[in-house]
Length: 482
Image (cartoon, rainbow, N blue to C red; front, side):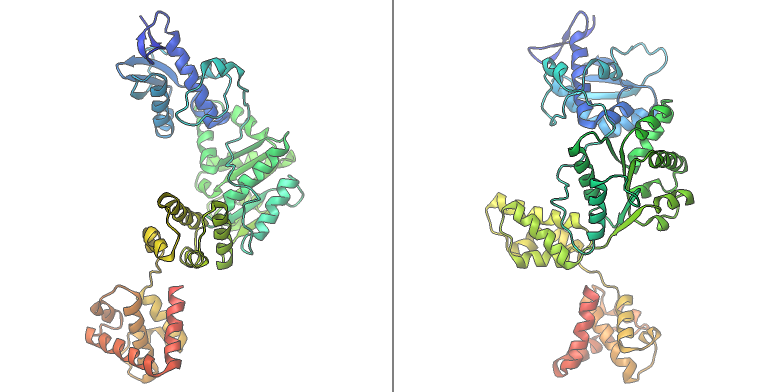
């Protein structure tokens, strides 16, 4: 006797033909397909076969160990959630490699389910699909990954560091495949807006309709290519990619060292450009600096428009924070925004995340945003961004400022032109590092800790008496802290 589902209790019960269990699997497959998209579903999930149920565990079978491991790591938890929502008695999903002659023959595969059940619109996790509605949902058949609707041109804050990249992105969104803009290569550090611009381009193009857009990370490109090789469907993979109007690949540096994947991307690149299709690529470095990519690929990437996004300026960070705060409806004092813009300088995502945390704290507890509350709520983030100054860095800066040799910091020379800058360096080492006096002394030619104590006291005394000297020392401090 096969296993089915008791619709009244949402638990497993005997069923003469097992149709109820198959219907549950169809609904799960439809939801997965709606959540991950046509291509990702077809690449990773269509080869899953429904296996036996043993108590509160259901087994799903896959043809290879590679596919099993990938599905387990990427979709294992979601499969368990969906099965538990369909059949409450199922608490665990076991993924196994199907073996020849396995007595637990598959009931139905997700490839059959993909044909049997049209794809629904994406559903929020935890909301069960209605089997009666499955036939009325529109089938989606494209390679496009889901674009994040939060990222648009309207909410991209433009400043000097990113204005050129923004202008190029707008041009491509308005006129894809423009001469000189294909490919569009965006590069810059982490969290500066490359991915935001790519999603904005994709959203703008899709709003106009009649344009197919494929967006994926370079890592996903590689995994899909490997899966196509393993499943002997490389021609289908090639045709899918080369049939789109716009191909966007994020974080291209991931392909460094992956020669076969680079080869496939190179041919895809050429086929699309030759057909007048648009390519948009992002990376952390310019094409010429991506050592490890094939020369021919780097050359092709650099033949279009290369636009860099610089590190943010203080003014741009303030603008980003002001826009975010205004959209939240929470009053954030200017001094708090300035404090955050000074403290978090390298990553816009982290900057916005810090402000989001402040806003959430204010909303949850009904308290105003103050500088004191900011320091308390964000203590972990602020601590991570504290400037860690080294003694070597202090010695170098002080030597350059007073025009002495770096070796004089640890030499035995006692001339005032050398001794005074050395004392200043010791003073700053005590103020700006957590090193002990003996440790500081060792960095200055194995001097005794009492020598360091004397230097610190002497510099403090001179700063009180000599305003010009105090200004020099404070200048050194600011240069080292910022």
